[in-house]
Every structure is written in structure tokens, then in C-alpha cells.
Amino acid sequence: AGLRGPRPGPVLPGVIAALVAWFAIWPTGFLTFSVPPVWRYLLLIGVLVWLLARDLRAAAAGDFPSWYGPLRQRLTFWAIVSLVLIMSRLISWRYF
Image (cartoon, rainbow, N blue to C red; front, top):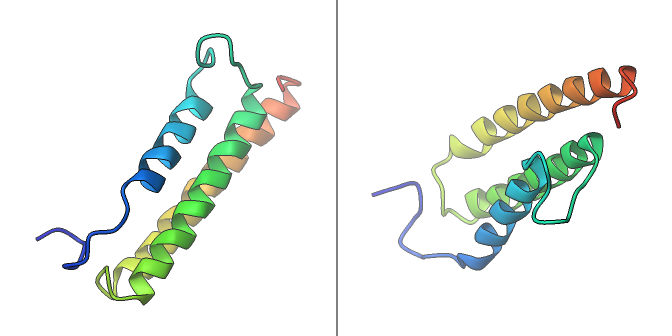
């Protein structure tokens, strides 16, 4: 018994989000696709916000326990704060 209820959700959107996040943080890009560092973190923040919205909808529908939504909000908030601090350091070093 994991966090999910008896209704299995679609797997493909989660896999796509994981791949986008992986491509965003990969240092040299994927094959010849390369994104500057600050933009990588912005892309990762966008994926985190999208995943948060998806998880909050699932928690409201009863797919997750009641404590999951508030915990997910706090964890996402602090992850985004950390990424913004990293981005601000990169911008101050003019590495964007």
C-alpha cells in the first residue's frame, strides 16, 4: 500500500515530467541540446510547480492521504527557494 489509492492514475505525464527535469539538470545537455544554467533551473522550477499542482489535485480527489498536500507544498517551496538562491549566485557571477 503506497501513497496512491485504489485508482491508478496515468503514468505517462509523470514520466514526461521526470524526463524534462532530467534534461534540465543534465550539465552538458542531451546530445547537442544544451540550455544555459540559469534557464535549466527555471525549467526545473516550472516542472516542480507543475508536479505540485498535479499532486494537490490528486490529494483533493482523495488519491493521497490528507497530510500529503501540505507536506508537498512545504517541500516544493524550499526546493524552489534553494534553486532561486543557486540562480542568484550564477547571475551574480555572470554565468548565465
